[in-house]
Amino acid sequence: MAAEKKAYPLRISAAVLEAMQRWADDDLRSVNAQIEFVLREALRENGRLQRDAAAPAVDDESD
Image 1 (cartoon, rainbow, N blue to C red):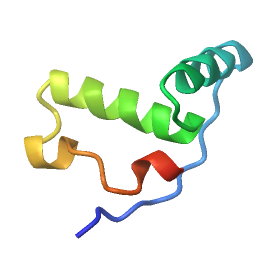
Image 2 (image 1 turned 45 degrees about the vertical axis):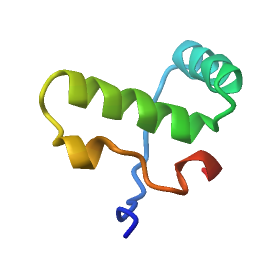
Image 3 (image 1 turned 180 degrees about the vertical axis):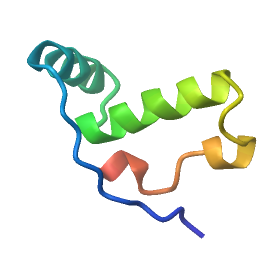
């Protein structure tokens, strides 16, 4: 079963958004999927996310 997704408004500087866009383009992801990927990895690396919750849902790439 895919994880439930929730919308969340995000305020981000133009420079950070542009950098995320370039990174997302390099990884063939949407900016939304890239931000979620980076957040999930940071949470996992810092022990703040359970291993099974760290796995992306099947539709993450299509955001």
